[in-house]
Length: 293
Image (tube, rainbow, N blue to C red; front, side, top):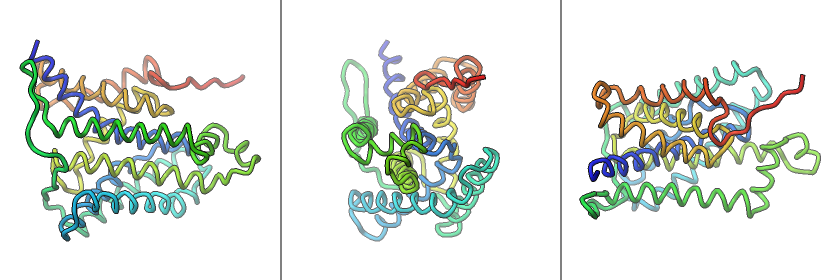
């Protein structure tokens, strides 16, 4: 029993990371209806900025604040310069644009920082807490706490601020929001900036656990897509819940399903995506789209 609980805790820690990137995917989809395939690469690029600042001698938390600010501005700039010109274009065009952004950001990171693996400082102290034969690393607890804080701040933003109310209005009905005086264009840019900021948090959480190199978010993006699909692409709560479920499912499958092991765990999120699309396409918390004939 203790071994099962140990795997469960590890799965929740991994799931929290997937949830943070899934949350960024959901935020962009909510505001613009775009599935951003470059979200992982934007998170990776932000992580490199944080690494560069810490390598220059800045304290980690100060470097993180600067990185989040740069990520927010960068997300708004991308929306203005790259996404805005193709607004309203066919879905295939938007997919091609975000895939192109994926390739460009990945190549830019490799050109600036090379493809050599770099160490990224862990913001949380080493060590673990033990209770009842279960060991929980302080790093895992820190990741869970950070994701919880991000979710809480987003809840306060959307429910208790004028900006958040405007963003919800734009996400629900852009045309009606424009009629009541909301600047839809700027609100969409804010949504991209917010999603880029949340994605940067995901990258900073991933780098100390894996490694820092331009391709580090590729696998995480697959799990994040599975989390967003499972929870529902129009539900931030669903993204977090889906991330935790995917993390636990992956960990338990790797530990207890013999033919999966550590090599085939990446197949778990793909099975989840396929199962959800076949059985409940809107996800656990998503709203079904109803079209009148």
